[in-house]
Length: 206
Image 1: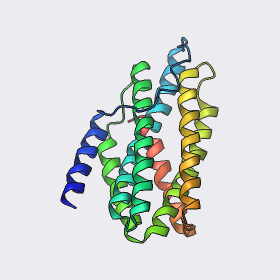
Image 2: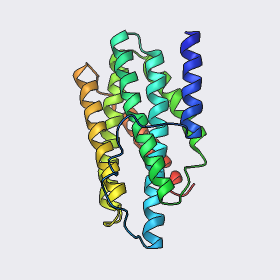
Image 3: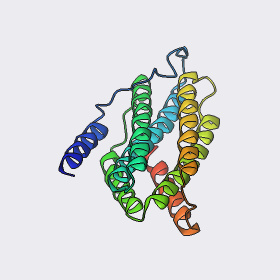
Image 4: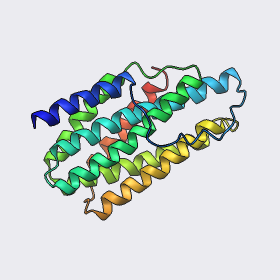
């Protein structure tokens, strides 16, 4: 447990300080950079900042859930998903840099809050733990679909990244459901949606 806590602290530092790398090629690599108006650039940056903060939250959730999971297979599944989500974190961070934009000032707070939620989900048992993954990924998939519609039509690089992220989220949710994730109660699903709305509204600007 001590080793896990040390590794977890190291992951947290790397996540919130932006020292992450991608194990997979960036989906935007083959897409040309296009000239965006200043308004479109700011809008794309705001959306990608929201997506970057979402990946900060995903790292915290998966790390906490894997720490509190009881079944080794569940723990491995959550850890594998976290590694893929780290690719998303690196891709969105790179895109923000290309747009001459910063990450959210509130990322450390979002990481801490998401970590606490992930621990709580894991403590309730592996079926609920996996069910939390199912619902989280369902909501994230909806959110990313909305961002594809809202991104400037000429921003092919951002759209390619978001589309690849959405495909991964759908796969993670399906895997958790197939592994036995249980449906979360309605109040829990609504609270998750409320928290997501607060995060998106603040990260777009802050």
